[in-house]
Length: 449
Image 1 (tube, rainbow, N blue to C red):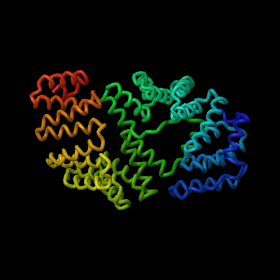
Image 2: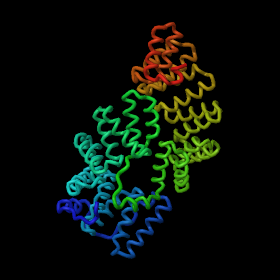
Image 3: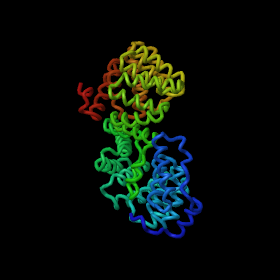
């Protein structure tokens, strides 16, 4: 996509209405929320643009720095003014549409994209942005056509295949979605959003082990947009702590705790009291086996905000890793006291009680989990496992059946049902459950056992 093409007059009217008259680039009004490194970068670029007002490169760099560090309103104003100066750069217009969307002005962004894709029908980055906007607003037929156009323009890029798969998922056509999503993952194995969509499709198709793997790899990932001519410069300005936190969380979701820790350590250095960053860093340390470091970071998080329930959940996980189950119980109870309406703290409490051999109390907590969130098969399965420990085989059977009613292919519940039926004297039902388990996962070691 060339940056020198001229935009139509109607688009100029839209830009003028949205961005005002030409002026010097605005100062970073939101710099108070930036970490020091990002603030220094923007101040340096601001001074450079002011020192040489005739430099297009200096002014665009400032716009890109605003965008890279999530100063959406500043970026919107900056790109709008720069478009009036540079006689209609389509690359600048694309970035204006992106930051306008991120600033929450969805209709304004949509109108801009709609005119751009008509003006530049061969631009894959524009087509993808347009397709994602249509998908976000539920216009599935139009989104499907736009993603097909992306595939036509860039067949070896994963974005078109991933987007088309996402549309098919929303249409309930999950079996048709799978080959497109598998192709996206083949083209770019690290594309987390495609992996998460693929996991969703696998789960609906009954491929539970594959689904669990892909969902774990893709959890928390974001859409990757096709690069344009300005993308390399944009990447060079991403120094904000918020960006590092987002990338750190994405690396955790991809199963890369070492990469996550490196990003989150820098984010925490810039914002030492950011409890979310501290908790994510602690999770990365836990996965790396750095238990002492995890404990130190979690104590910092607790000191920064003693009421954040997730800190206590992570402290419970740390205590379980250290096999201090009494401490795990106390931390889980502290989490439950701060977020009694959520299932996770009660689940953690039940786990700790079970490790201590206090199965009756653990089952009570598991029932509380089900009362809060009855739509998750693992919650019913956990209650079934605890009932088995107490010798309540008939009650366990009911819990496993409840899990299977939600998801008939949920293998842990199917395996539990075999034992519960056998111990209850329901041999025919036990054999039927075993036959179904063999059909679902013939190579699973527990099924073979």
